[in-house]
Image (tube, rainbow, N blue to C red; front, top):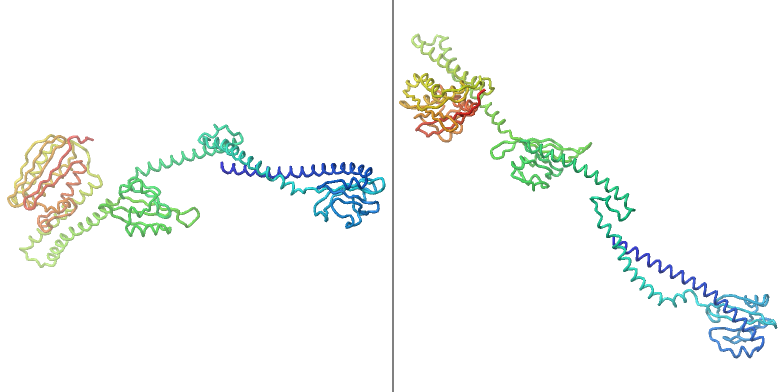
Length: 558
């Protein structure tokens, strides 16, 4: 802006100098013309008086260079001329100044002289004898005057230009300096230029509006970050070309990213082909879904296009990712559970159906009838046991079991259950012992009983002949632990992580042989979770297993 002011001031000065020079030149020319005309008229009057008294002798004695004197007879014949031979000159009676002098006594004119090839001014005076004396002088044109003044004017122009350059520079700085120091954060406090008051007031109003909008956007952004930051789901907002606009903390944790990813292409974080195809589909305006695996967890990824208002074009995209591992696992368990229940029920039903068909058709000998009835009864009892376990674990899932808390004496409960199962153990034969002591703990009677009963019953079923079962209670700092150790077949290491799944059996043929339903340990795990107890397993193949349940001492009563 300083340069622009400087240039404008220089231009104004140059135009002023040129126009001033032209005006002065014209004024000088006009004034010089008038002065020269008066002087010439005075010279003519003086010369006329001299000619009147001295005649040709006066004219012959004149020695002038810049003035032309001509004496013309009353008939127009040239009697004398200081610049040319009179005999060679034509009649001058028709010349304007001569004609005017003959008529009125004085005459003046200005014209270009072909003889002298210059502009001449003429002054004529009629003498007493009727002749006319004429004096002529050359006159400088405007251009000649300008050329004569050119050199001093150039010096004047240069001097003024330098002065102007210096002054305009200082003035430009003085004008711009306050503008550069304007406090635009507080525009109404600037008082240097009152002319700028409306402009500064408008800036102030706009700043207030911008401030309000900024506060509103910051609040909205803060609310958005707070809401999305507390979401369990992963949320990513993308521009139309796939650039990340916003990403919440959960998404950054899942994709191993940080804040620097904002503004970059989302494919920088995830480049799987199925994800890229889903993005392209969303960019074309179609919603897309897919299941993606991250570190063993399954995430449903929904990508939705965000269209422009009243347009089919995509303004951006929203990616929502949420963990569906539990849902997928639950669905898988449901399918497995249904399949296992069907399978477990199908075997005894086929056996019962086969035995009943043989009995109905009379294809069984009388002495074998009792054996077939015993088989049917055994399979029915197995089905009843299976159905009861299924119903019990379903009640646990639904929370419909009586959940009233009470103080449970685990030692007394373990001894009672051991006594109940001892007849079954003696058939193997397997010995059961209960040792240790512990204070009563808060618990739910049926759940604590289910845990102890299933662990001891499992230890009997999967023990070796003449094996041992040791039930031990021990008081720890914050818990009371109950451990059931057997000398049975043990559990392979690769099966230990799945042993608590429903219907999962390490040795399926052995399980059916001893009548297991495959739900005992699953009931133990579920009941322990409801009691907030910790369940551990230690087992070595061929050496036996130890199940330990740590019950909390401080479980609240209700």
